[in-house]
Image (cartoon, rainbow, N blue to C red; front, side):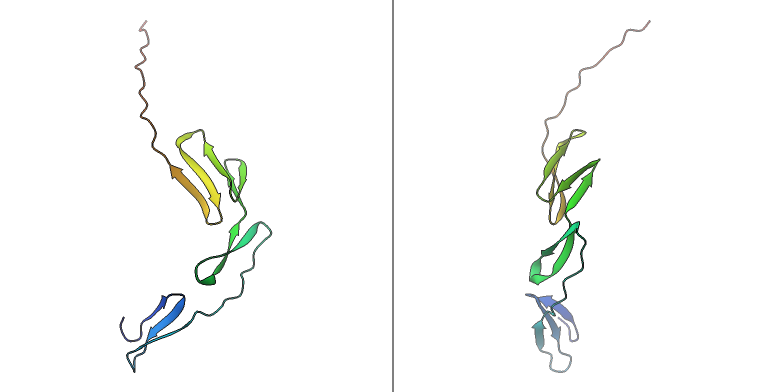
Length: 107
């Protein structure tokens, strides 16, 4: 790091002091809990940082809750899950489809 640089390390805010050219680290300030609606929930992440996430996820006319998993018939090789981090799309290997050739009589 260069003198004057500031960065985060191990949940602490560190600065390279211009004068002494040493690293000084302080505890990260505690932020107040964010305001959230009844349709969201408070999630504590890395270093105690709290964020609000929605409790429900609308998808094609259906509403899913945290922990729900579903698939979409129009997307055969994909499944979905809704977690406190958001919607996760999981792709799976699908067998290759072979279509038979369709012929139509010519009149």
